[in-house]
Image (cartoon, rainbow, N blue to C red; front, side, top):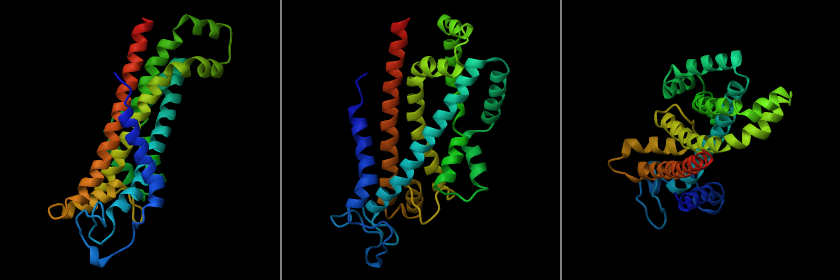
Length: 268
């Protein structure tokens, strides 16, 4: 499988436009214009306007900062936490492993999105609250994958020799476990980003996500659902952004998975 250059370029471009282009583009995300209500895409408003006459392109750029921040920060937290939990279970085994498995199974008893809904419904949503809630509900799959691989690594002869030699456990984990587990970590991270963006979009679409005046792709999508029949662009463009980012991340994840599988076959 070839390196997904196009997906990487698309992601970098979206990051650039959302975090830097928002300061270059002249349109204002929060400026109301009674004379420009629900205008279709044009030279003056490239993506059209919403029900309050606000520039949709400016709002998508501004909302992208929130959605991408939630996606990447949540993925970093869940991947790191899942890595720590999974390695601990696979390396120390015994009571540590049994305790972690019970904890993972307890979380997996509830469907992730319903658990997310249950937690967020009792809290006033904000950027960091949503990041924390998504992180709490998204680490289990990563932990399970890492635990399985960690068991295999800890049973390797050279690891057993290091343990017998009473080499510091942290040194063994950082020097030998981390490089081997890195591909799985990055695969989980890329999937975690897309999953977090979709989760936030789903919450915002239901009206319990990001609160005004903050905006995300999900909130813009939600605002457009009531006028979809007369203003298709309000839902189409934020939905397109979510799709492009998710699809690009999945392509990158597939590439990483293919490279990891090929290395494992080569070693065998």
